[in-house]
Image 1 (cartoon, rainbow, N blue to C red):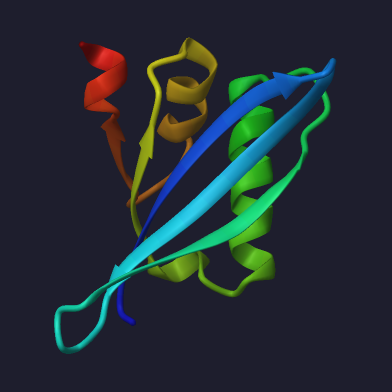
Image 2: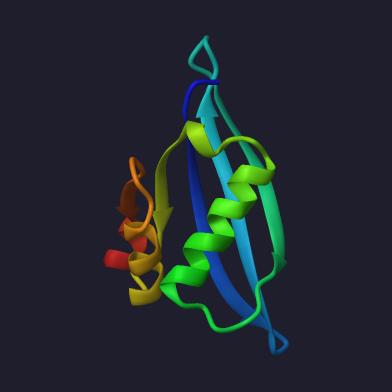
Length: 99
């Protein structure tokens, strides 16, 4: 697996904040694969810097940071701000959130 793309979202359920990350990649035979990397509590504040640091730390812990090519997110200002901090990662805004 040479490159990995991810999706992420943050939400609150029963007054507890969470982050979820899925990863997506193609095999050498061009088969699409995906995996749930994590769903975990993500304490406030959800600033752009905190989102960037949490994503980066998770990618580093899975030893995939250097393979991340693109990230797909909603259009929340804090998430967009956090994605801008990544070097060499394409940020794709979710079409469903844009419509």
